[in-house]
Length: 357
Image (cartoon, rainbow, N blue to C red; front, side, top):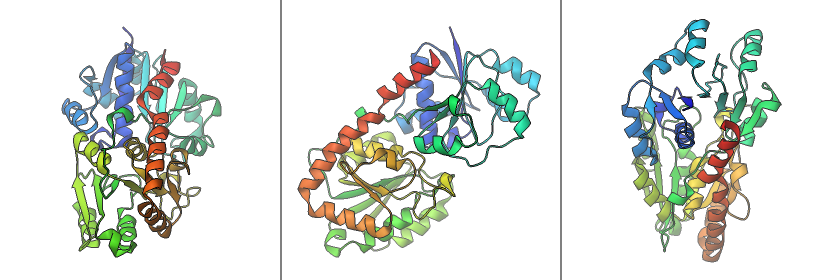
């Protein structure tokens, strides 16, 4: 049986990138590979299954692999260890590793403007890499300025669109999903609270804004947001599990997302939304997206299914228009569901087959 190794140094954050890596591992496992996860302890499996609704029982945790790839090991030792694998999937932190698997895939979740390491050493590393996998065209365009174009492969994140369904009668809810302590780029929940407060009172008295997201230990940001939202119908759901998230998506009419607000994506591409998994999840549940016009969001949302915003006033204007037109909401909602299927697990699996088999 062929052996595969999956390495993601940020697994314990259980963010969008980690869902990507773990779903890649799940698919490779289903394709017949004996799949190992380079990580410190087994508890990550149950945590990830609970958070993402994935079936990861066939993955084997390999702490030795985590140490070999995370810590500085001599080149010969790394060669002996990695050479045993037929496939290595490695999530990059902005640097290039030495990998000696039969097929080496480097994945970039973040559109880094610089690649770490010396040019001479990186030249040798590049020769060992079969493909650079990017999570969006936006990420690819940024990184291709530093990396070879002939090894590029865009693989949109897998969204389990079949898991999400709208309720028969949507409620008067505006939803936003994203970490409260995002390590790479702020989700700008503060801007969305300000936008909600600028909506007419007849709307804010009837509609509720719900934020759902992960939080590890930086409660300071959450406390700030709660103070900002005081006296308004704003609710915070911290570390929701997959079942709770599905319920929120199914009930919400409108989906808000403000990562990248007021960021120049040409100067600071890493600070905008690199793709937008939660936007696709929301659309698959029939939510109409009203999101910031930056990064990968532009590849997801079209005028037929939602709105791309350039300012806080755009957010309030388009939201007001939606709430005033029930027929527009229904049309855009149906189109959003159809559009979301372009980013489903089936497409993800079929594209993986083209590079691993």
